[in-house]
Length: 274
Image 1 (cartoon, helix red, strand yellow):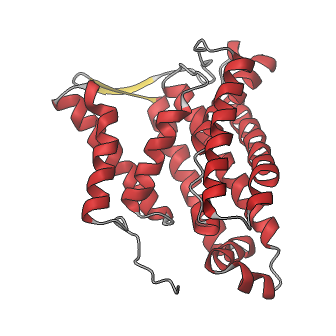
Image 2: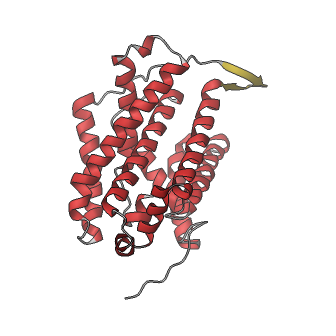
Image 3: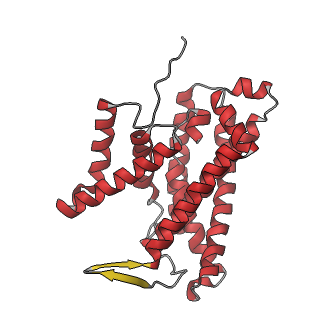
């Protein structure tokens, strides 16, 4: 979404995801939910973390990106890297560099077993919440006035302004929405792999970028398909080769897709007047 509207790769997105996990961690402890797991408590922590990261996304856009919007793209790119480093190092100062154990917000239950494979309610929750948020995102973009405005701004800022669209408000909303979804991802990953640390967003952010390139930069369905393909590929590498090569796979895929089909699976070739 951010690239479609600003033509900016937001490298700080992975660190917003990290902040979402830590917001969930502290909200759970402050509200006393860490010792009383329940579905309601999990939903409350998820909503609070999404709201907090939405506010963080708004702040980043308003004070880091908006003043440089008329500057060359390179300035925005360097700023995005700077914001990422600021969140990573600030997180280490505030939260400490040592990993934290994410609380069990919902009681873990094994739903059924197939041979040596067990399916827990956590895995079902991750898939269910992810699908629900994807459907909600598609609805917002394609079936609401704000979503139509987002599409117009992504086509042309100037033409959207002439049509009476407040481009600043739409861009801020895009950052808020993307950051809230990053927080949801941080909570879901924290539940599944209960070990969080201030640098956890680095590799996830890079892999999210690779997934976006694989699916086609600017395409939401492409990003979803790219992430699924990359995730399945990683599991195949772990199962048949070694977990050592899991992270290397992402960069191999990036090189291959840039060599074979630079626009990605769902990307479109566009012409630009010079």
